[in-house]
Length: 273
DNA sequence: AGAAGAACCTGGTAGC
DNA sequence: TGCTACCAGGTTCTTC
Image (cartoon, rainbow, N blue to C red; front, side):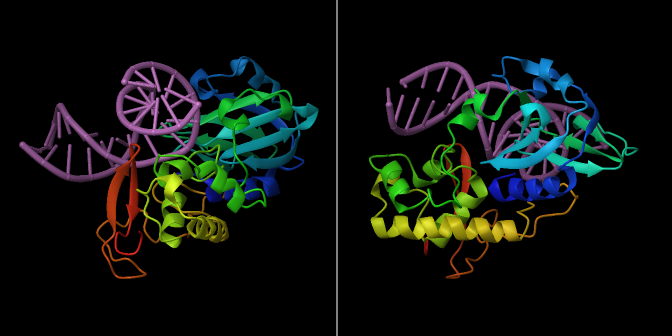
């Protein structure tokens, strides 16, 4: 599940491989690949050939391939999407939905569950994509701090787990790293966001930044499908996520799995209060 | 308006 | 063995 650290890892690899490269041709197999609320739909994708990639950036879980001529290719990997740098003669399988050809190699978008979406826009500032325009601050920036979370938590009855996964509050934080951050801050995912105490909010801010930095350093978490663009697995080892029934590495308690907002959440009831 | 839940989608797996 | 049922989850949509 590509969250901020996974997407950032892909961004770094693509930046090193794609910057300054010219697109020769593209191939894609289904219109549903394009973001649903893109008015231009796939009419813009054929504009890609002959464009040069200037820069690869990221906002939350969105990858932005900035092109010559002010076009931007937006890519969201969804749940199982991978962007792979491959040799041109490598065969595409049935999960390949988009290929971008460069001189000497190609970029392949594989996505078995097809939650991933792409779209080309004319200028970075003109995007109407709701999920992208409503993003909150980057968790690793200075704008993501105690004051911001305090304001956003205030009066919210929803669980802290759900609020942390709200992209308008913490851009790029998903199921894995919200659990990991809550574990580090010793806060139960079941708590109501509005009732988290100031000292706990401070701990949470630090925990979120720490866990994301550590995960980026480890090139993300490979739980099932995720691979980096160079085909590597992520080396981050979660402390609670996916460890139901195992021992808590901090207190030895038993890690449990509960469902919050239709999502699995893992935590240690003994040391997360 | 905020909150909760369903829908989208398919590979993998549990259970019979 | 082979079938069905269900689960995984980021985002968007619908309902309350």
